[in-house]
Image (cartoon, rainbow, N blue to C red; front, side, top):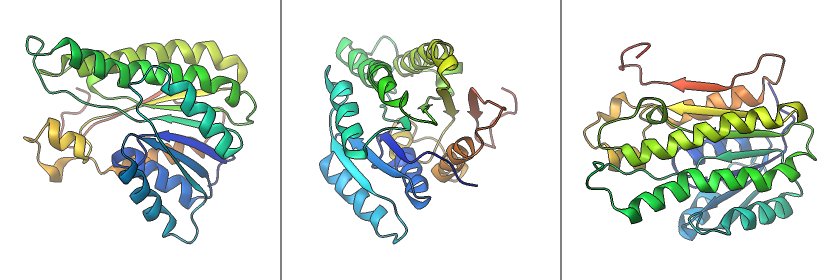
Length: 242
């Protein structure tokens, strides 16, 4: 199935889940803009994506989402490069595997700025662009940690709870305008971030990031009367309904 979406911005789109979402979109004819902090990673990701002769356009923006003015700047630049915006994927995020007592104020501020504040204001500045789209869509990449809370991940859990909380309110605020807002809350996905945060996990039991991109594509190609607010995605080895 196809989607009417033609222009997408993906934060953290040069690696991990974000890269696989971007790959899925470009393979299906959607022009994308990927944003990230590392210019080298962005160039390498763009090169990989454009190796596919069927790939749509790929734009890159190097930006640090911890900076206060980054959301407004990113949305403006992405909208101008793409000629509009149909889809915002807030994927960029950082993790911290540290006990509450050991977490510093600097670490707390950084994780909240990137995981919660940046998506909040990216959504705010994206709304005027999305209102000009016939299929306005926002997808937030959350985490099961935002629902359950895990030991030694209190700051990360707080940031993902914040992301989920404001998204619930946002979805209600813009529902009457036809702007669809989704969250995906995956468990352990085989990315560099989970490897650094949870080296104890067996790689073979982790979720493949392509499984997440497939779910994103399902959402985008099924814009009917059935609406999915949040998808909870657990590792198959985890206890069902836990």
